[in-house]
Image 1 (cartoon, rainbow, N blue to C red):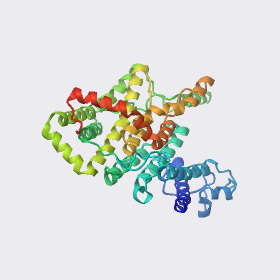
Image 2: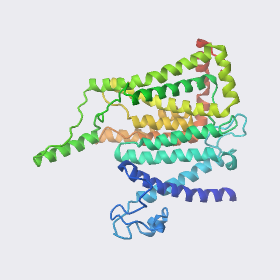
Image 3: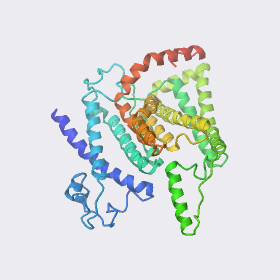
Image 4: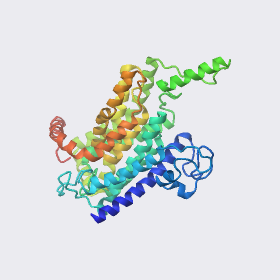
Length: 422
């Protein structure tokens, strides 16, 4: 317990420092400012803060929530984010290494769920570090999305790349939370990733076109702001130097058709590669040997499959919802967010998190609909909350779903002649 106590104290302090950096990211990134320079300064008077003013939580309390130079109030969000981040680092340490919750144990490991606590900090800290990095990115993304209705894609690309790299380095069949996969899923991942690169190349070469290239339909909050700007300009006898894009339902559906074309190469190549593994015996043997003898390859492809499935589930919802209602159903930021989650936690965890997310937003959604204040919600925070939940409880959820998934795999195997070992 003494060793755990030392880790907990250290992790709270370290997590609070990470939270201090997240505050910088949340303020500067959406405003196009560097997160490195200039040093931390008061947003009101611009004075550079002393190093001891930047001490997480303590600095704000010492200053009594005011800038030492201009006396203007400093938002309480800063110490709250720092304290919450520190608490998350501590809480997930306790869950992973003391209570036995978190990443699914390796087959045969002596771990029976809550209370078993078989993960060893000295061995499995990279798994914990990846999860904390993902939580930190999700926290920053959620704060930005809640305020500005936009998710910074740079953060998601970064943590997605980290997830791919970490799983390629650490995954073995004995690693908790490993994403090592068998031959057919590996072929799906390799084909889908290749197709994605082809689509990106075609997009860059302008063979494929971006959907909503002029900014897309305005959200309700944007329409309200545009209407106020337009009214103010008319009162002053001026005209705005831009016009809000006019998207009819037919045009919205046409734009979403471009996204369907973008998805064709990944889907086609994923299906072709999987079919070759299923029906061409030499190819099947080669893939089986590759993923069984090279754990780094099966871990990398497992992470890539999570990225593809996590993004595709949201993207499919976006496409079907947009086609049905003639308006954007979900933002592309949500697609990138769940792709990053899939790269870190795997396809199964990302899918479960996506389907749990509505429950986290249900109470607020009912309130907003009842009061008639607004109908559109930033969905990133709820996807993030669901991911944080799944990070702890995916194992029992997967165990509960296992019989049904086993039956589904059996039916698919019989239909396509799939060997259980492939």
